[in-house]
Length: 321
View (cartoon, one colour):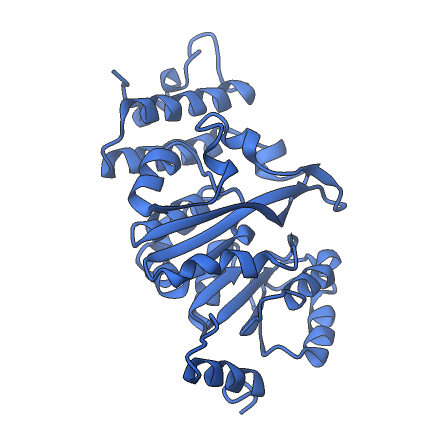
């Protein structure tokens, strides 16, 4: 009765009958040993200026004090909560994404990673484009913070500057096909899932159809998921930095890049190249990005100065005319 007929759900139903519907946003928080960030994260969700329909907390068998913190929060929460404690660690974040969308009863889904934060107006901003029924994904710019919560950068504009110096300075709505062909063919231009709001049915369809392929990736599974979701509709973007992406010193993108990660990046690039007809400038940028990573992380050798000369990477090569 509490889960299915709460007063909060009743208010959403009344709003719908009154021809003033509110998007039903399900928030999924996957957590594994992030107890030291969890309370602050939960506060950033419940304080959203746009109403949250339900909160789904997925704890992946944490060994810290996460369970106690979750139980204390749920006991005092005014938002409908579902909590799942895995008996066995899933070992893969995308399995948690799949589990979260299975439980979600809203029409929009926010995967709010447990170590990130959000401005109070995050949901209010990113839900707006869903008035267009063809929008399947909406996201905003992110600020970067370190493990202690101190600012690193106000945005990710430097990261995407090799694709465009102005595309991400203004709001836009674009077809998924064009976003993939112009941007996601080169790199993952959406650095943090916490900045994204999905249409549930589009995310569900993408994950269920391709979960084995997605979970085979350690670092590029989110990138591939975005591509599969965007094959189903439009993307919307806001330049407001309303998401706070926590960058850890031991994260793959900062401190432990090796050839296996580059293989994943090249694999996604190859997938897009084989499915979509890409313009030569896009292929050139994708190749240049791969070469940049190859050099930055000292993977080159005298016999393989270019990434596709490496014997483990040559199969990903596409000669750009």
